[in-house]
Structure formats: structure tokens, C-alpha cells
Length: 382
Length: 180
Image (tube, rainbow over all chains, first blue to last red):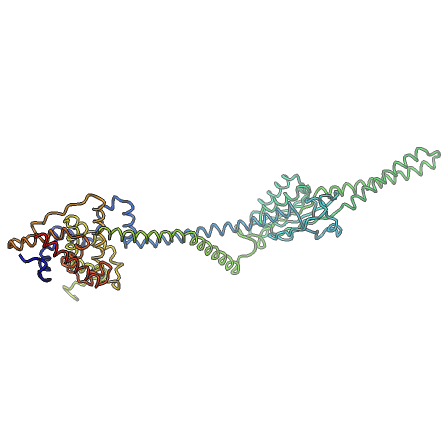
């Protein structure tokens, strides 16, 4: 037999071709049937391996259409996050309004009363609850005033305070808001001096309350009023009434001394005429003292009780149901749309920033897996 | 009656073009793929399973085939090669399977003693070859791939494929002479 080393290429090829494995007819027929059926899946070794099954599932070209619902789900997640964030932003705005109101009420720091006496701005060195307050409109943060240098050592001062607040409510909720005002007044031991309510469905409805609130609780009461609805405007004033109070008190003391003096003088009178003169002076002085006492009482009352006007408004100038104040037009719609788009863009950017490292890791893992598989396959040949 | 007796398939009834192309590819390559895989694995059952898996994979990936990256036949053999190598890896992890004895049904009925001896020697020599060399022999002489196609399947240049093939044939000749 001729050695293979001396065999020609064609001869060797023919010899090798005679060894070519041929598929069994049964197997060929089975494969033909599977082709005709579109290669339905069959149980294989990968079916027992969850990881291999997952890889096969991902690698299956027919699965890529699942990207559509996956993309939809991602978009839905972005939309939900946008709505949540936009809603929380709105809440934050509301909170800012409320906190501004609270801050303006509980820790008033206005440098000078808009309607107060001109002397107060220069003389206000009392404790925080006796400092002047001013807030003109809702949502306007009250600018902090520089602390008074000698506040700790300041003597007691009498300050008269007043406040006006206008609250917007949706139509039909004026009565509810009014009851909340009553509750707040009761909670802070205040007094409703007068109230006026005008209700009406679909028309402008309003309620007005004239209140007296203990000055020490004015801040908390204003905060409570601010939470009833959206604060459309708020105005707080202070007036230093220390001077008239002190003056009245001193004049009263003088009057008391004068009365005591007249009483002593009356005791020493010897004639009827002298006695009548002293008694007339005594009556006049007692009347004077009574007026001074009334004045002093009035001043003390003004210092201890703050006059507050609460007005609740509803209608075209107030809130729409569930909305903010003012009309809702094209401009506001564009503004809302811009806000929504910016929030959506932010959510998308944050989401991508969070996903980018994961996607990068997944890509690196995929590339490493491919390289490892390729090397492992080549190793199988050695 | 218009167009009597003429059945015109509506476009929705016609198989997609990709399916038609794949069908052609399958018809022209089924036996070659099996021959290559069986020559590499030397295990009929495994060869059948790997061949079926390769066609199944190719069928599912047919929409991702890019003609610019090579001929469909080379693409199909690349898939079959990966499936066969995966099978070899599994064998490596499990117990080594002994090569199956020669299928008697494939032995020609009329054969001279010299031809029979030569065929046995070739078969024995193929068994002694390294899988890498046996793969080249299988691709070239069993599957009938051209050197360019072999290069595409293996991911090497055509000249490199020719060189490797020449070395594999030389080793086969030596192994055959030793087997005689």
C-alpha cells in the first residue's frame, strides 16, 4: 500500500471524503420537520441551568421586541417620578409659604412697623415677641432684621400689635374655613369681637373676623390661620405704647398722691367753707384718677391683646378647586409645562446618572464574558 | 371568472424573505454542517444534537445576520463551531467520551482490502489528531469549505488558514503512515 506521505492531494481528499460522516436519514427527516415547524424549543441541557437559560432568552433575537414594553415601563417610571417630584415641589412651595407665615408670626423680625409709631424703630430692643412684624404678601419671606445689640438688657416695653390676613379658599369652602378660624381663636384663648360671613354658591363668598388674640400667642395663631388656606396677603403692625403707658401710670400715681394730699388737707380743715373747697378738689381729682385708670387699663389691654382681622375670600380672585390662586391661562399653562419638562429632564438625568455605572458594569461584564467564552472554546480544542 | 385555476398567494401568505433564504441555506448546508460537527466531535449522538442546536440558534438569529460581515454559509458554520466547542467544553468538564466505533452502515459494501486498510488507517489517524487539526480537516474535506470560508469561520486570515490546513494535512499523513 502506498504510504500516505506519497499520496497526492486529490487522492488524499478522495480518501478523506470517503470518511465523511453522513446524517442518519431519520435525523435528517427530524431536522427537516423542525425547520418546517420553525424550530420549536425543546428541552435541552440549558433548560436545567437557569443562567444559561437566561442567556439564551436574552440572546434570542425574537425577544428584542420586549424592549418596547421595557422602554414604556422606563418612561412610565420617569413620568411617575416627575409627578411625585413636581407634587413635592408644590408642597415645598406651600410649606415655604406656611413657614414664612410661621416665621413671620412666631419670630417676627421686621425692622420697623409700617404703621407703628415712628419712635418704635429706634427704641425696639425688647424680646422677640415684642419686636415689630411686617409681612405684606403671602409667600414673601420676611427679611431678617439685624438683632438689636442691647436686646438682652432691654427694659420692659409695652407694644400694641395688630395683624390682617387674607386667606383664599376654593368656592364653597368658606364655611369650613370660617369654622377653622373659630377653632383657632378658641385654641389660643382669643376673642371674636365681630364676624361677618357672606356665602353663595358660584359667586363671590367671603367672611371677615375681627379678633382679639393674646399677644403672647399671636405668632402661633397667625400660623394656624395661615394653614386654613392659601395666604393671599398678610399685614402685621406694631406700635410701641410704652411712653403713653408710663406717662399715664405716672400721672395716675400723681393723682393718687394728690388725692391722698387732699384727704389729709380735708382732715385739717376747720371751717365749712374750707372743707367744701377741698371736697370739690377731691371730687375733681378722683374723677381725673378714674379717667387715668381707664386709660391705663385700655393701654394694658392693647398691649396684652392683639387685634387681628381675618378675611376669607373665595371667587374669581381666590382659589380654583385644588389649584393655586389666580386665573389659569395660557401663560400659566406654559409655565407649568416648562416646570414639568424641567422636572422630567432632571429625573431622566438623575436616572441615567444612577444607571450609567450599572450599565457600564453590565457592558464590561458582558464583554468579559464574551472574551472568556471565546478563550474557553479555543481551549477546548487543545 | 377571472384567473381561473390560478392560485395567487397574498403577500401575507408568503413566507418572509429571510425564511426563504434560511431555508436555502439549510438545504445546502445541513449535511455539511453535520459532517463537520461529527468529524470534530467523533460522536454521532452529540453531532446530531449539536447540529440541531446550531440550526436552531441560526434560525433564531437569522434576522441579525449581516451579509457585510461574511457569507451566510460561513456565518452558519461559525454558529455550528461555537455549539461544537461548547460540547467539547462540556465533555472536558465531564468524563471524556470515548470515540464511537466506525459506523458500519457507512462502510461501502464493495471495498478492496487496500481501500479498507487505508480507510481504517485514516480513521485511526484522525482520532489521534489534535481537535484543532481535526477541525481543519473536517472543515476542508468533510464540509467542503474553501480556505476563505475556513478563515472566516475561524476568525483568521486566509493565508493563515491555508498554512494551518497544510500543517494539519501533514500531521494526518504522518499519523496515517504510523497507523499502517
